[in-house]
Length: 177
Image (cartoon, rainbow, N blue to C red; front, side):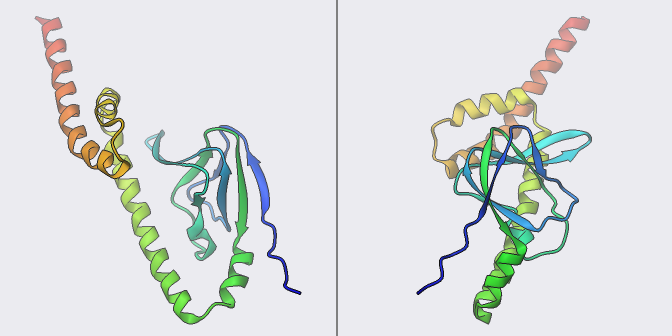
């Protein structure tokens, strides 16, 4: 008789709850089953969104293999149900895996950490863009495929930002004349 796989513990995270905090150690990953989570960083007392994550996404996965504090915070945008994966359970399964899989996993973790850094840098750069520029460019690229949309946003945002700031400068100058 085969042994049934363990059932993952489920948890509801309520809207607005920050359940993973940057700088703290975390020994769990979370599989989002229902709801929406946002990842963010805090800089100069501003909450800067990195991404939003929906059902089927696993967040905090690097914490399953690393003891380092996490660099990104996560909060529920709506009431969200997650299944929790503990480091202890993950490591038990990993011990039964051959060395090639462990080597591949090490490489994937390294790439995930680099990707997180890139995502944080992109979010910080984007946070310096005027909110009206974001709104205008999002309206322009609405309906495009995600990869194409991101490419166009990254090209258009700096130009739209400069245009909006220039228009505001002109209006401010007119007010002083």
